[in-house]
Image: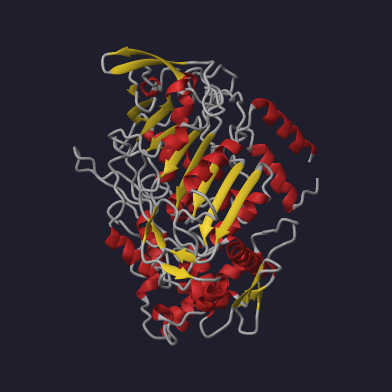
Length: 637
């Protein structure tokens, strides 16, 4: 049979979407046969995971807010950290019948209950990733209802799961370092998902409706969870910590999720450095990109490598037209259908802002700070001083819309009219214009947009820094080598272009050796650097460019929102993710928006970000009759 690349994508997606990612209650397959070649019945120890069984007599109750909750629930058999490999569950009071026993309550599911349009059989689970740069997230050790109302009032069950962060650590009672970094944040959260499904029969939830959401690098983890359901990449990690693989009846447990939401996701680390140079760095001549420096040459080479990468991705627009990059007279990839599509995205965001913003308008720059989401009262927002420093690094976050929640605000500027706003942006060079009669904006070039609104704040090697000092270098560290190089493209360029770089200012031949050595490192479970980078990349499953194409269950529902003026990462990471998702067969819907004028924050074009999130989750979970109609319509399409 002659199967095209795109037909294969559809076939592969259909074959891997049969787990729980369809957001409909489905029977799971029996666990894999453990018998021998003679066809013996599988021998499963059905009591293997009994320690993970939820104690239904241990619920606490907040009478004022009608909320039942349990804290500190260990979600795997062999946790290396009780603080991080555990979770808390918050349940609307309407879903339980309860009997008080001492300080606790024995609860059973009240099957005829309803809350916010859901029942105990249909209620979704909302699970936050509350870390912008993948600091470890501890399970709550204390209870607070602050911020939970919007979730529980809508009928959602809120689960706050801990996970290991970008580096290893120590438990208070041990001198032995436990492993952290890639891909442990993803693996830990997969174990938490399996724990919830293991106990689903006792909880008032639809276990196929698990939604994960995050921001920054946490948004990248949310996206990776969304594309790697039941992926073999994590099997040995899940086995090592004793994640449940089947329930008490021997039914295989899936770690696929129903939906992923993210704000300003930082992800796809294999191209994070090259995409940063292509979009933000290659036209700059400041600091590490100064004329005559070897790092300027590296910046240009990285930008070119991103152009080659895009042209091998088979990205397509909504009308199935291929999106590619082409070179211009100076050899840079600054033309082509991909470039035009990106510029169209930016222009559309500008037009939306200028059309819907009321003037006089007050712009307040903002910067995302942990925590953005509720659940752990012991977390406190980052200091104003730290946030101010980060905001300065955001090149003053040029004008935009009102500050959303989950950010810290700094100085405000008032603009009397559209004209004054555009005049400020343009300065001495007119690069942006707006037609109120047409409701359209024009921008002269990507280079002009970046120069005025998105100047690079990271050096060349934005994520894989020359001195291994970035948080992403930490993410790929191993044991006592807490930071390592991980970018194979940079490693190859340093190897192939040594002579050219050596002729420029500041090059040290030791760089090439450092990358070569670091890229050869194995983690505690003998995974290579390449495997670990793949395990943190949502595109690894979505694109035929990668070996993992079509190898996992992909969530059907997606929401991605990004502030256009943020300089933490290039816009191309989330753009490529949205494009790939829209052409993956098992994906039902992708809400992707860029927000003009906003930075690294929970950027929204309108409304409160968490209210919008809850509304989106609810919209993804129709009543059974409506769901059947939608499924029929999809089949007809």
